[in-house]
Length: 172
Image (cartoon, rainbow, N blue to C red; front, side, top):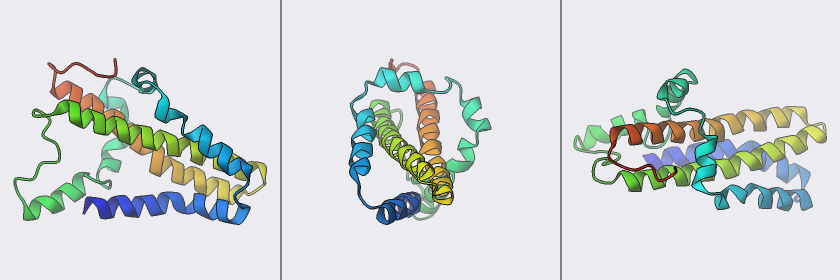
């Protein structure tokens, strides 16, 4: 179930970017944007910690993260469907391995930052070329495919750290 949800959002998220680059052609800009987008993969966790919007879940909840969480892999709807067949199913065994789950969160956050930058650069290029509708669609895709998932990972990190007070934050 989770892989199907992941596949759906990835296809939907990348569709506008793919359409843009197929129509524009893979110029030198494409490769420059790829290189620039990969930079977050090499940044320290302290930098990501500095990008965290808040240390409280309330801001994230006001921004709609709990609503978005319903529709993502390992989200509320997917978990509910899996639990129908396996009532003992747990997404995360937080108490058993909070460090492992935080590493997974950090990996997802880095991935979405890489994509966020690539989508931003691509939409900027579309704007420069006067492709305003394509730029708008890419920006909307970026919001739902990258921005909200980044917020969701930040929200999850707060919740994990709060539920595991004895666990030391690996990003500080």
